[in-house]
Every structure is written in C-alpha cells, then in structure tokens.
Length: 131
Image 1: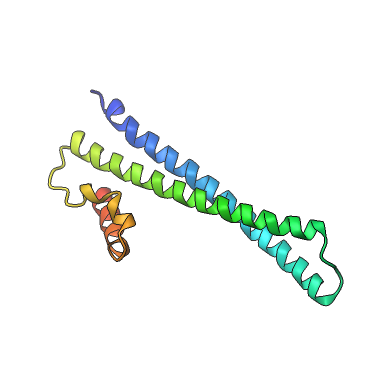
Image 2: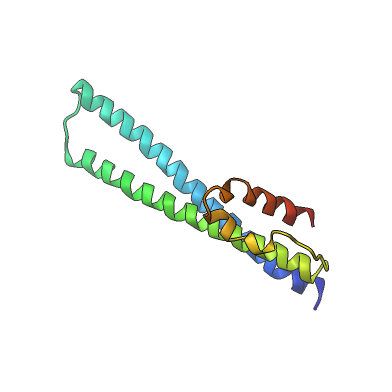
C-alpha cells in the first residue's frame, strides 16, 4: 500500500467534513438574514406600518424551515467530524504505526454522553492531532 493510498480515506473524510461545514455556514447565514428580516417585519407590525398578511406568515414559516436545516447541517457536521477523527486514528495506526491511542474507541460515544461530552472530545482531537 502506498502512502497516497493509505492517506486517501483520511483526505476524503476531511473533504466531506469541510463540505458539510460549508453547508452549515450557509444555513447559518440564511438564518441570520431571515432573523433580521423578521425583526424588521415585526417592528413594522408593532408600529402599525404593516398588518398581518400572507407574506409575513410565509416568512415565519421559512424561519421554521431554516431552523430545521440548521439542525440537519449541524448533525451532518458532527457526523463528518466523527468520520474524520476515526480516519485520523486509522491512519495513525496503519500508516504511522502509532499504538496505545487511549481515545480511539471514544470517537463517537464521547460526543453523545452527557458530562463526558464536555471534556472527552477535546482529548480526542488533541490526541489525534498529536500522533
């Protein structure tokens, strides 16, 4: 196995992570824009410059869709990060011959367990980047 072949899954996982992160950033930008428009519309509504109409209701429905999209892209970023971390550990083990990696089994569980998710993900990323 060549070095390029060994590092391909690691590179693919990193590309996937950044693509998912890009979608997440776009969804968050859309959410900020939507929130600003909604604030202006609600201020106009409160001042009496505008009344409740279908376009205002459609804007509020769009807020719900955008919020759902943020949840999905956030989960996607989490999955992409876990996949990349798994690839880091595999690459360190196979290509670099690293052994004794304490956190290799925690790459998924550490993000899900309450309390553990406050400190273990940092340890995982730190260990995977140091090997």
